[in-house]
Image (tube, rainbow, N blue to C red; front, side):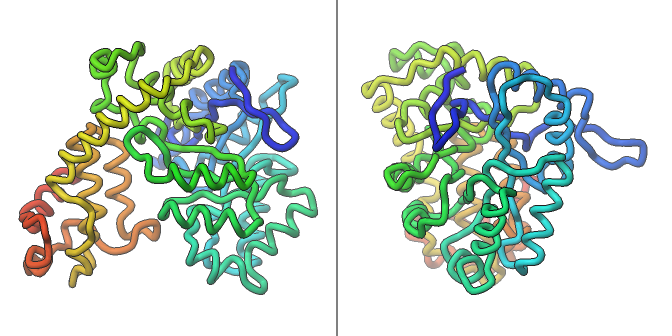
Amino acid sequence: MKYVSFKDVKLPLLGFGAMRLPMKEDAGGKRIVDYDLAVPMMLRAFELGVNYIDTAPFYCDSDSETAVGMALKSWKGEAPIYLSTKNPSGDGSAAQWRKLLEGSLKKMGRGHIDFYHMWGISLDRFRKNIDVKGGHIHSALRARDEGLIKHISFSFHGPSDDIKKLADTGHFESILCQYSAIDRSNEEGIAYAKQKGLGIVVMGPLGGGRISGFPKETAEKLGIKAAASAELGLRFVASNPNIDIILSGMSSESQLLENAEYVSRLAPLSNGERDAIIKMMEENKRLADLYCTGCNYCMPCPQSVEIPYIFEQVNLRKIYGVKEHTKTNYDNIGTGWIQGKDASACAECGECETKCPQKIEIVKQLKEAAELFK
């Protein structure tokens, strides 16, 4: 395993994302993690040197932290395991934030969390709810002083420029954000945060799944040797010098072994190879833009339908073949992560179509999207 230095520790280039652990139903029909499969898989990861593991309270039907705790308790190796998890209480009270922290510690049987994230925060939420008198940043600083947290972090799904502003606050030591050959929107923000001394962990390095729109055959046409699309995706991300850890959500031991093998012998892409892939992706984006450019002129929708976001998921699925990730994103509409309503809420008023510079048949396309993600 290849490692990077961060603060006073060495961390693996490949991190284990515990958000897609194998699941099963218990005797009562409740979905839980299949511990018989998941725990040995995580222990195998630790043996391979993948000793950075990321979880969260709501992953795997709220069972991921329990499974990770079982693996941590079962680990008999000498190498330390670095734990990352998150606090979802972005708008709640300081008491609620502390309760969630203590709950995660208890669930995982740990005395401290190495990287504790303000989960999915925005710049607006940070200013209004976190960096205020009695806000969560002060709770985090106290918890760090008590030794319950080693590093204060944040995960992020907003505009790249906001990464810079959050990095400038001086409160955070690392960031977790999206980055892949498909989605390079955070590239500038990542570079800035790295320059400010933050550790950079990226999620979704394979676009949220195996990128069927980024196949090995395409790489060969570009003159790039790769055993599979997964290897090519990991090599692309690793070729960005500002990235410390590539976090990959793995649901089987075969995926773990595949990714660990690729990373252990990883040769970052040359500038020419990277430029060739970017050019190919830009062409794919041009094709996607014929469908929707994401200009937002159609908004706001009288029914609060998240039109550009829905069409973005359709683009990713149709142009790049990303299925599972886009279905999850679509299902998250209206849950708090993504405000508004899904395509089924369209009242067919047609107001959006009068404002669309692309003259897209939005009502028709929304019907197709509703069917696609049903």
